[in-house]
Image (cartoon, one colour):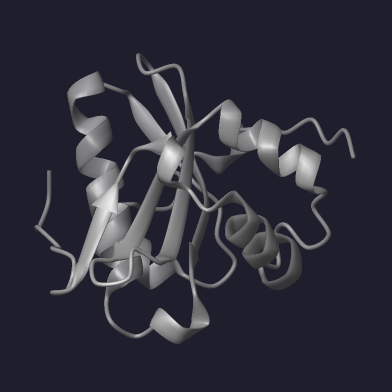
Amino acid sequence: MSDVHPLPEGYEMSADTARIDVDRVHRWLSADAYWALGRPREKQDRAIAGSLNFGVYEEASGEQVAYARVVTDEATFAWLCDVYVAPSARGRGLGTALVAAVRDHLGPFGLRRVLLATHDAHGVYEKLGFTPLDRPDQWMALMLR
């Protein structure tokens, strides 16, 4: 796709949902992520179960330091969401490398588009090929809550 963004030395990425530290991810998102503040644990557990999940881990300790989730049919569409890097691990390029790895993981599916929403991280996603919607007036949302 576009430029390669490898993980910094000492970190590894995994798409194995069994490795996700679900307690940590719930704490991160429900307490520190503006888009998921107050998200109940049961809802987070269902989101994880119905998605592709990606974690970044310190190789030495095995501790999870970042997370991303993708909702997809693996054929035509995907939505990248819940991208989070622990505050103690920020500034090392982990978020960019994680999103690049997710993008590359999705590549073989032949998807038409991968969408995401961000309030403040446009620059991170732009360097990985994401652009604003060409025709945002064609998109609509049904807000249920």
